[in-house]
Length: 447
Ligand code: S3P
Image (cartoon, rainbow, N blue to C red; front, side, top):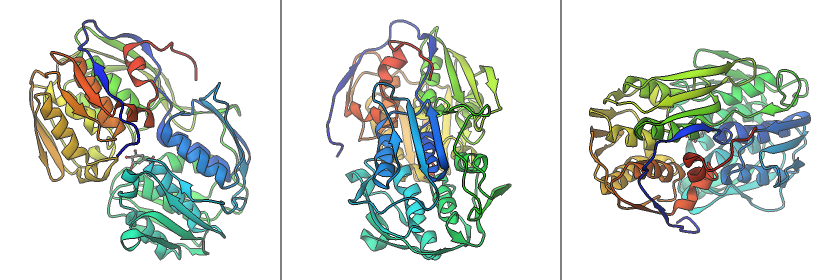
């Protein structure tokens, strides 16, 4: 269970959503800025960092490993990481608490496997139920000593750092977390680590490590990495200034769908990351009949960004399968909400991974949206939604899943009466002040 259980009452919107919004920094990139910045020799100044529970977990873990990280609560989107170099981490005095963050636990597994010390990774109940064998098994093949419950699959994970040897690994599932863990281990391994992924999982680690000067090559779906011979450079902007974390397209997705569904709405979402491994949501909505405009496209930094302008439009059903699923893996709760208002059938397949996200996102999305009157049928590897159906206000439950909580909030905006969302506070795992940002009650400030 999630620690606190805050209820939120959401009333249907009686006015359009208009204006400009800046959603918080990208979660995946914020984690990596801390972890990779720590391995550089020199200081990485980071702006636009995501001050949310998941990223704070990484911040505390990296500090416990001896990395000086400056963070002032008065300027929560700025961090300064004083890199300790590849061999400067030190043995933590206590267990490392990853809270609810799968990215923290899996990436750290890879980083810690090749250190010369002992460490233990743990986290909240839901995280201790998530499968870790997918990352621990290939790391064991590299020579790592990782133990845990359930035959080494479940946290707490005890890691006895060891010298690693490179492997060639074909990932059975497309997972950026697994890929990144193996790349981090590869920085400490003897030989060339070769990782092939079945689909285009997000490539932030590749981009950032490349910019830092790590010996890394990319070819189609294969990444090759070796132990660097020279120190890694700190993260910076192209002009040498602070490294800028783009706004998170996975957070923007909730506002994009809200603007599509609430009559007469138009929103401009500024500085959103449009890395092609993350824009599956835009392709899916386009297949559902939506259009949008991109403005201020910038492609000179490590990650491309743009302003996204989207307005209320009718949607129709579509089929989502294959590589498109990987490129939108975190967006299915809000895609399900969009599908309830689309004409015809929306079918999601090849998405069995959704069963092992923060929660079972197939079962729980179907269960909760049905309470609001949606026609949604769970499948083993996806779901089918028939629309459009009017949504009704109901009492719904987040199941401790931030993205389910935000998706239900957007659904509640177009329901016929008030909705009570139980466990609403979990939204802060990735999107502090979500409701205020959605409703335009937060002043839009520069990162
Ligand atoms: C993430 C990768 C994805 C995603 C998660 C963040 C990352 O998980 O669902 O929210 O930062 O690498 P998988 O790699 O397990 O698919």
